[in-house]
Image (cartoon, rainbow, N blue to C red; front, side, top):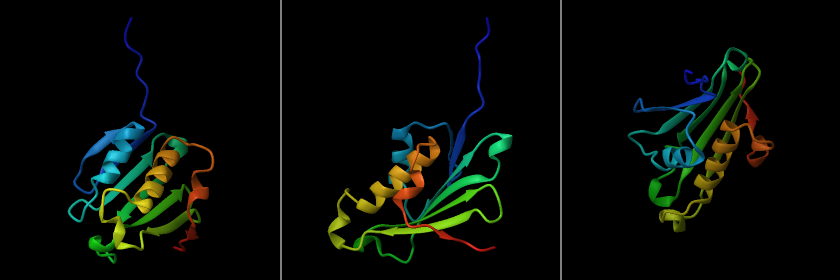
Length: 132
């Protein structure tokens, strides 16, 4: 009997052209932790015809000096032209120079919950609609 293969549910790519299909929770968190100004974004795309156009993009906020904290711009598209939203998340204190970051934790949770289609993923941030 041959092995049964299934199409990936989602794919993640980085600005440096690294691609993972169906990464685990831990791999998603690691990809986010590896963002820097040389590789400043992640793009997560749902796979499958009925899911075309559903994406989540995370970019580092270049307006925030890394010595003063971390900042992220998160956008998602729900598949239609009127389904494009953005949220900005920042640490506002330089005390987050260490490895701990509330902004990174919030973005990581949103990333993992969106990717694995967990209930309530969109309730963790203040989203604004982006007009075309």
